[in-house]
Amino acid sequence: MNNLMPVLAGSFDLRSEGGLANYLRVVNAAPVLSADEERELALRYRRDNDLEAARQLVVSHLRYVVRVARGFAGYGLPQADLIQEGNIGLMKAVKHFDPLRGVRLVSFAVHWIKAEMYDFILRNWRLVKVATTKAQRKLFFNLRKHRKHLGWMNSEEVDDLADSLSVDRETVLQMEARMSQGDAPFDADSADPDSPYLAPAAYLQDMRYNPEEMVSAADNEAANQRVLRQALDRLDERSRDIVERRWLAEHKPTLHELAREYGISAERVRQIEKKALQSMRHALAA
Image (spheres, rainbow, N blue to C red):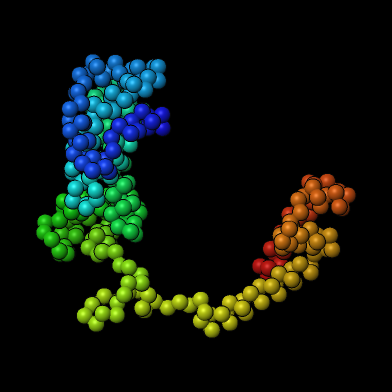
């Protein structure tokens, strides 16, 4: 796909003044390819890496990207951005399209186009990603059209939706809550007495400088250092020196540097280090 990007770069500027209107006028005027023309262009691209053939395939199908993008208008994202993402999917489809399978490009490309738009919507619909698992992604794009009214669903509707989409009831409730709530700024000004909103910064505690937490962390660190020193003291002098310099020193020597210093092979240093670490693990686990 990367070699197709320069072919189309600069051809359409959707962000300029009147860019989207001009874009729609251009793509709607692009010629519609017959099945034979489409097949010949696809063969030229696959066989000869003919970028001009690929460009014609892409341009002739841009109108279908616009059509798909209109179906996602309800998510509140700019149509120009959706179209651009869909165009990436179209170019990917052209790259992978096999004209010998007897399928028209538009039928093959629609899945690639929608996939790019799906990912774009999930990344940008909210500041915090609302869908992470496969079940949540499925719910995100089906929840609206399955709901019969605005507002929260009743228990029966939740069960019906869970059954129809083959997900559990808790996932439906969780996704409905995520989609019904807007983004909440962490440190928004909530001093207005008439505002019902209380910013999280006003009630979430910063435990980093809590005296109890700091003392507990210091005690744990001291205990860990004491146990580590005891484990090191059980090693012979050479093994202890290798472990300390390889793992605890600021400037760590290589195996070959230690090998030259001790007059042994680098492999022998590695064996000593490995045996010492195993011994320390047993001591720390005891």
